[in-house]
Length: 300
Image (cartoon, rainbow, N blue to C red; front, side, top):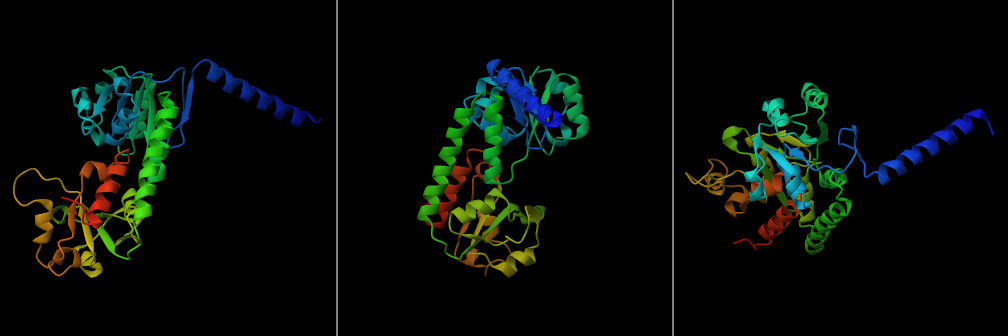
């Protein structure tokens, strides 16, 4: 046996021994969604989640008690509102986070500047980065968070529950050839939509619809003229209503020049639960149910 082969064999044995030692000691090793390796001596008991989706995943896994802080926009389930809120995104504040003494900070791509990550890690806080834009990537995030928290079985059960719901809806949905336009940002702020390789696009397919902007990659800005030219059969808006003025549906139905669109003339405009349909988390299955009910005339 050559010296090179012996060296490789010994290295393999060493790796297997380290893996066994990690398992025996209850250590946790994960790769985050930016390919970074994070190793901890034990499952996490003190964690700050900056993104609403990650916060929802933690709670769905039964880890609410480990949350010691949340990003300012984390608002579901309602119990998290009792936790200290910290700034997130471009306004993320290291001192605010360190004051909560977390072992780990779960952070999305909008807040993951190299300087911020370095500042937290230099102070002994592990940073785990998430970035889910599709349903499959949502499953990846759930597995990753489950591993961090020592909740692998719960993570797999949560994924299976989502998969079962999607499969049930897909089995009941026929491909109709009809199109849906997802309005992510309303006209007054500049139109944005969900294109291909997004979970909204996948929800459309599950419900037997074709995304009117499937040629747009990811989340993208579009023009009013493009919407009018594509004349979607359905419009789904995720705008929130704050109790004053026209509702998001009324605003779309009343837009000048939109009256001849099939979706508008047929009153096929739906105001989806903004948080459920726009967050890559467990409630995507609820968003799928809502969309199916809308398309099939089952909404109240």
